[in-house]
Length: 102
Image: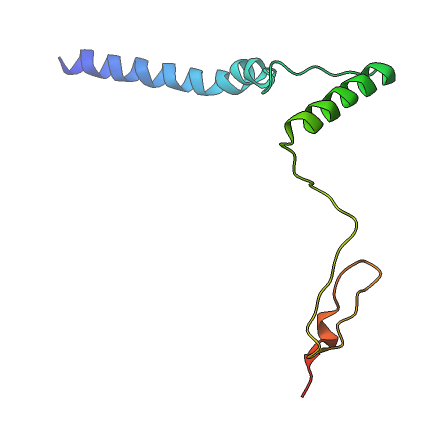
């Protein structure tokens, strides 16, 4: 019984070692080529791409389900008690110069 159990465990160990060696070389390339979004396509023709953009803009205008992700214009509001709040050319605040008025 011990010899059979030893043989079975040794065979299982060798099989797991072979699987461990082959998995990165055999399985990974097959799994890595599956695209995440299988319905997407790439469009390189400018006229076709602009038609797609127009279609997207029409859908956004009809549904109104869009949120602006980028807005270059920023509104900065500060209390009159805040002194030294100036906007840098990078469109950020310089916190080192900000203080409260006495």
